[in-house]
Image (tube, rainbow, N blue to C red; front, side, top):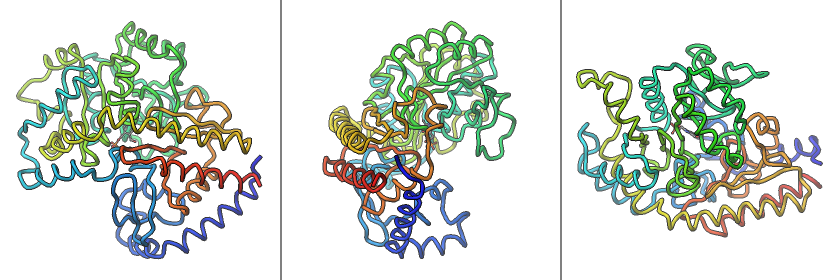
Length: 448
Ligand SMILES: Cc1ncc(COP(=O)(O)O)c(C=O)c1O
């Protein structure tokens, strides 16, 4: 049992240590507050445990150094944007070269062909388009789905996250769809645009699809944004039969689940989606994303896009598919996020998982840990949750922040959202073992 009083005391001790040991970051944050909204360039950066974010001096591979000269093992990796490791040399060289030869032209370069053909091989879908963020790739896929099905609604899972896609900020409250907590300025009540069901509940899925107004199911093959939640055995096979039976399409958002392998869960679990979306690490951090479509979707949408209107139809964008982004994607897929890299990363995530599981057992904590490919995550419930509602009910913001700060003070960065750790090709066993040691020390202090 963890006493709240003990947790407060320990958290306060760690907060004082953090402030004491990061004077330069504190100074920069103080200055930033007079020019940046909330003192940060992007509001998520406020979410880190500690009174202010750590300002970064440089990052390479699985490590970074802050402006106070402190070094860290990075298991957050830019919340997957740097799953390649920071600035892999081979990509840095290609980018430096490309930057001198034209960055954006609104004309294709031959890198786009290589990338399209490689994505075909990995995910099995024949046609690909590019955007700059996974959010945009999801938005464009949704637009295409609505256009060809002539249906209004998007179906998502309770507690999903797919980027800043308006339709996906919907949740269930006592079984009724409504805006999700924290949804800033919803354009309309998302109940008008969205149906929501719990993950792993096939009856609820069928009931939602039966209305025959769902254009598309937008889903991560395994949920990762409310902690990792794996699909039950056979879930996707039946779910896919149901989407087909009721005429809805399926977007597999592999932005995070690419951690499962070079072709994400789509390849690993043979998902056969109508769309695949991927962003974040695909260009080693250079903005870029992609969406692939099936033969049938390609045929149906091509028939509906008039050349005269193709630039104002709501898909695409000036900088999308630019030469730099495609050069970075090619180098990343060719040399960094390779099958061989996954063969190194996945056993390291297992090492993380097993290390944490052993400490949970040792300190008799009512927690669990789950692995998905190169990613692992612990939850504050004894059994891995089966859906978003269950997972969210076990969240503990104060405990989570304490553990994050405890790790940060000892030179290790976890993702600021829940307790997620990701391996990159440059991560080593010693990096994982540092986490296990820190986790064990925190567990010992919490239960003392
Ligand atoms: C599954 C998933 N899809 C899409 C996105 C959106 O990515 P971006 O913020 O790069 O647009 C995220 C971001 O966390 C994500 O987790």
